[in-house]
Image (cartoon, rainbow, N blue to C red; front, side, top):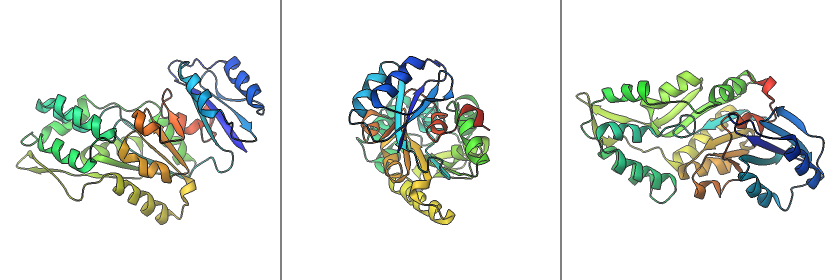
Length: 290
């Protein structure tokens, strides 16, 4: 058995009953269940539809996401999440670079790295090098003035933790930011790269080893093994090429507002919804949110 979940951006809340019922009828699905009025609805399917991606494409123009997952084992026991452009709405290194006056160059490198066009380690080394001499005080400035959380993140963490899940933040960014994000949102642990500082200024050299795609895969294996969890019991979320390893390993690998080349390699693509979509696809209704 499978579950088809239709999702809209909570800000628009424009998922109409006729859309849900039309698709349910076309696929011969079970009775529709509304998880949140105007935002999320689901129904059972006996088999995976052959025209799944054609329907998915047609719904993009309506501002809707379509996710089909196995009915068994939907609620996951661990969340493994990327940070930049996933749990927060910014890329931290881009914000630091903007303050340093090299924003345009660094944003270009970041975009290409996240799209998989550049080697992540080399791209990070080059970007950090452009920050050499920047006052370390800027880190606090960026946190206080420039960072904003992705909508739905607080609901996601609180609800999964209230239901016994373990939550880990694994970022190719920096501990100076993951520590703050983890504390505010309630992650159980966080892993990231370290921005080296000498005499109150950034050295322009990243700490080694650099945490990238393989380190996220390693974190996936280490944390799940420590908790005694199978890969199928994990939901992972990210947006960049360096997230693909952990997204492919997880029972649910979610490409959230991802780069097109990244989303194309994932079965769960959230282009319109926010982080609360990760709860809906696990079968939580809005009444279940902690």
